[in-house]
Image 1 (cartoon, helix red, strand yellow):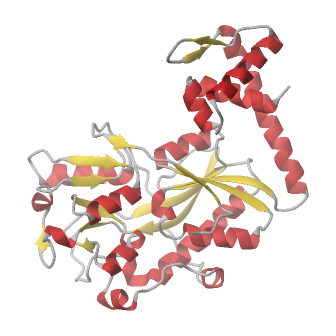
Image 2 (cartoon, rainbow, N blue to C red; image 1 turned 180 degrees about the vertical axis):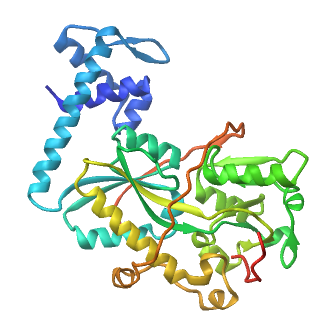
Image 3 (cartoon, rainbow, N blue to C red; image 1 turned 90 degrees about the horizontal axis):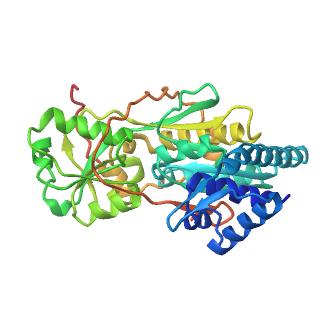
Length: 368
């Protein structure tokens, strides 16, 4: 029995669409159809009811799904055990949010390659909500994201926290002045995806301070958010830690806004009793995150003039990271997700670790 055919069967059962299944498995729709047809011929049974838009499991298909998942999981467990017996090799699948991709993730990948040279890393960049779904579906082994799962089947390891600040392009004319939420509401507001922690906090901020409706555009790509704001499309809330280059170059500036935003928590989550390397890579991630925070210093909360002039480099070497891995980290707060109606654009990126790893101005702290 071909394990790849069973994997194709499982993904088609989940996605109920030949095109989406082909994209997920990086193959063609014809190949997906051929694999399903081969399984149906082997068992002399129809597994899916097909129409022009979807493929749904037949009663026989539903019965087979449970067995297929057990066989595939057992095969994956066997592969991992055999590979683990020979050292720190094999494959680990990591999901990561863009806030980490744009800060200390390249340095983490360098440390992983140095510490585990035989370990292959497959990386998926997505939103926290979708990464949690992938982890629960065993589609990834470890996720670096912004919301503890708080589930007994999973370990949640706090990494660090990023302060959040309102930022905009200097072209909007908001420099050098105190800005309130009423003034910000005059511009298009760009937000993290709906139901995410930052988006929920932003909705609450405006509901508290602004009576009229506020136009909010939800985007799941941090790179797209940064580009839109730098081009003067609107205003947004971002961690200064991930836009250091834009702040140094003057493409973005941190605004003087009285805000109640809590820091953005970053968390590593993985299934207990699962991939043997997940906990070890999570520990490396915690060390690298703390080292990044310590190295950034005051610029974590907004770039100072001295740091802008010096053009500090926030990419840590493995040696430097190892020396500063003792910082204390708070347990990320648990957040709820009310229904929000704004639209969301979802982006997804996959990359291999073998490839080259390619501020708010200082002011007195205000009483919140």
